[in-house]
Amino acid sequence: MRKNNNLIKLGDAIAQIFKEEKLDEKYSIFAIRNGWEGLVGKTVAKHTTQINYAAGILFVSIDSPVVRNETAYAKEEIIQKVNQFVGKRIIKELVLK
Image 1 (cartoon, helix red, strand yellow):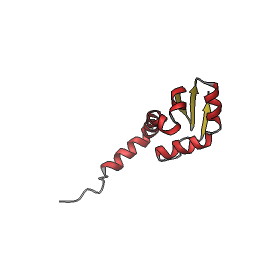
Image 2 (cartoon, one colour):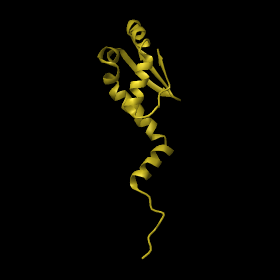
Image 3 (tube, rainbow, N blue to C red):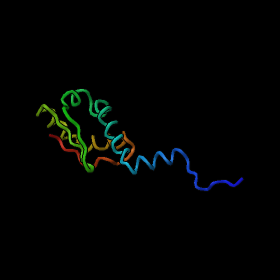
Image 4 (cartoon, rainbow, N blue to C red):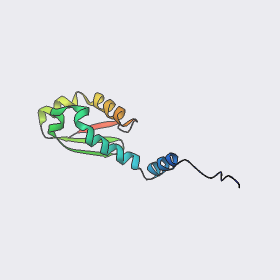
């Protein structure tokens, strides 16, 4: 019986499908939304009304001008925490609205 050399590992196949369908990006955004409080703290999370993502930019709507202003000072730290949380550099910019 001959061995079929076209076989690939299941994990590699799943990773390839995730990459081709951009599911890894969608999963990362889902994880960010679910882990937001742990990333930014209770106060910012409590005032966050919406989190969206497009082309490396994380758009975060905050309903308090004071909290939004304070959060603006921590933008780079938040970007770093989020990227570390998902395990790759998915967020290049943070826009607070």
